[in-house]
Image (cartoon, rainbow, N blue to C red; front, side):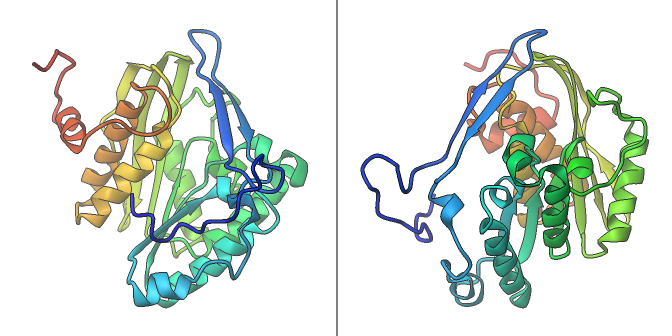
Length: 281
């Protein structure tokens, strides 16, 4: 990972003033669902402010061609949305592609205005976004779009209703060039139906649906979907290929502990082609 753009700040030795944010997750099993707990207050990232980063250097002089951020960073403090708005304004100036993962986390917004504030912040940012990514809950909780027939447990995943919602989102935000959403029905914590859809150039593309996948640790499935999708688009693959790469990468991420992918490109492509789970020797 290129460390060139990391903004380092002095550490006080204990974390009273600045620290690394943490996220704890009890992954769940069977009928006991996963439980996440964010511990991100006073983190270095949460204290970023407008003007701290030279976006003109990054997008204008160095030519970075894709900028990705999301709803978790937007919720960390009162200043982080301003950092995003500053970044996307400058990214637009240099025609840098902007992607955004809605990543709605109720606990992060709870004390700063809840869903109402989340929608307000995310809708402002959305007007700059080229590639909008989310899951079955995000578009409702973070952008205010309703999915017909979706119950509170997100267990009724009628693809046609998600397509209607995406069309409403594109109508409201015509700047969206690509909209992608994962589809997860958690039958139990360890058995999920998993798929995804992607809208691009006026057409919908559905990923290979994987019913009843066995989940070792669900954390990272959404991030890995986003990175697989973005990788494919940056490599010039079409939208159908991109949604399949994203969904396959997300599925593989849920077979390993933690949210950092351990899957290789070769493994992702093997799964897309229908490769089985027999041992490789």
